[in-house]
Length: 240
Ligand SMILES: CC(C)(COP(=O)(O)OP(=O)(O)OC[C@H]1O[C@@H](n2cnc3c(N)ncnc32)[C@H](O)[C@@H]1OP(=O)(O)O)[C@@H](O)C(=O)NCCC(=O)NCCS
Image (cartoon, rainbow, N blue to C red; front, side):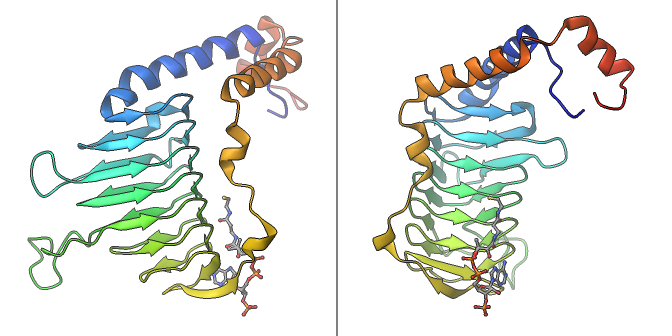
């Protein structure tokens, strides 16, 4: 389909259903899911375990072939936590798995297939147990984690830094740098004097943003007729 052929009324109902699904199934799975969360295809997002908190205006995108999985498997009942700040982007295929503690700052962007874990989950000698060592992961505000990168146990990433696609981060990363490779090394220093525009800047007035998107949908989709849309589903033509 080259264009969105859905009629406005249908998209509006779809978004209402999506919001209901998020509130009904995902919000109760978290200790906190902040206001104005946008969860696309929330039926492909799994949240499991205790002490999971996600701030306001989160964007989380599930896909059928790339589920988002956010889970705490603590050492005992009620233990372990994942705390995620405001305005984060969590792309399809992202997995965040905490044994003890993972903290993710505000405006952090996670690209497709990011993996963050604070544990190896098996001791290298005793494969039946996890190590006793507690190795929290801390990701600073405005960090950008590139496509399919991995952040391993005990790592702290300083604010504003960028992890390049496919990097494997095994050691701490300072603020304001780009790291790349496996194991990840600093490949570039960023200049904080230039100033960053974090993701949160986009969400200053979330109610106005929602209205803006609704106005755009109304403008673009109002011309779409219901019968023609149904026809495109069962009998698509070139150019649809
Ligand atoms: C991290 C990134 C944004 C940095 O871009 P940049 O600032 O233009 O960096 P440069 O291209 O100048 O690269 C700097 C150095 O790092 C190396 N490098 C960059 N990305 C790399 C990667 N993924 N793996 C290994 N090395 C990498 C470059 O080869 C270069 O090395 P050199 O100085 O020896 O020539 C970019 O490399 C990247 O990974 N983009 C993917 C972002 C992404 O995942 N987007 C998905 C949507 S959110």
